[in-house]
Image (tube, rainbow, N blue to C red; front, side, top):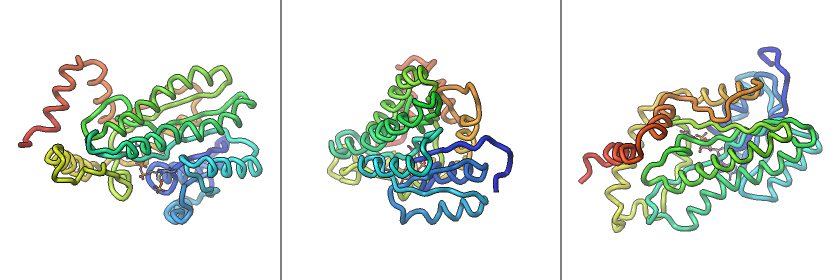
Length: 288
Ligand SMILES: NC(=O)c1ccc[n+]([C@@H]2O[C@H](COP(=O)([O-])OP(=O)(O)OC[C@H]3O[C@@H](n4cnc5c(N)ncnc54)[C@H](OP(=O)(O)O)[C@@H]3O)[C@@H](O)[C@H]2O)c1
């Protein structure tokens, strides 16, 4: 049952089998919105359903793989028949591949871009066609702290999120002409499956013959220690999405947590020479 009086919106979310997508779908459904929760593998809908039941909401679950045009066409056909249109799109589906550039294959880098960048474009293209004729709509893109800062061994992920940021910024101008808002959310680190079951590593990440081997192993330990010490509540992201959906004039760029805000300020205000020295020293200190 909805917990408060709201103007229910028809909301499409990608990547709802876990993490931010799952929590966002469950939260918005519990608030009374009509949530179309999508995931590429419907066999993974169990955890979402449990959460939705627990929060006393209702969601419509549809298969959608953001890299598969047929799957997207089919999902939007279903949505057109059932709902006629959507009012909000949350582009959440994504993953991150760890690995130094030379340890990554071209295919791994392309695949990262297919999901995090072209995947967003594939779904957005369809969504706009529902929103433009009505002269309203909101598109919320889940970027990352990695969308405005960079780190070693994340060049593919960094590139995909920087590309998403540039695309979103440009699209914002274009869609403003038709009453559609575009927003970015740039989270720091939250302990979700993206760092565990869904984590991916470069082909040669664990290859002792790679010249990067000692560095990649060192960084992996460092990152995993950081993640295991990270107790931020992932529900902060759905809460922010809910706010953006109901607000009239919200910011384009939204930074939900202190870690991301600190990185944003450092990157913006420090001379790059000093900023990059801090990153280099902090990440590789103590390695032989
Ligand atoms: N957690 C963080 O610290 C953090 C920080 C900044 C940004 N982000 C971003 O937040 C978003 C959600 O990540 P999360 O932390 O919630 O991780 P997560 O629990 O791993 O969730 C990722 C979701 O994306 C889905 N997905 C991956 N490839 C897909 C595809 N081709 N088509 C449809 N769905 C696909 C996954 O589905 P499967 O179960 O089928 O793989 C899963 O549902 C991502 O864009 C990520 O880059 C996360």
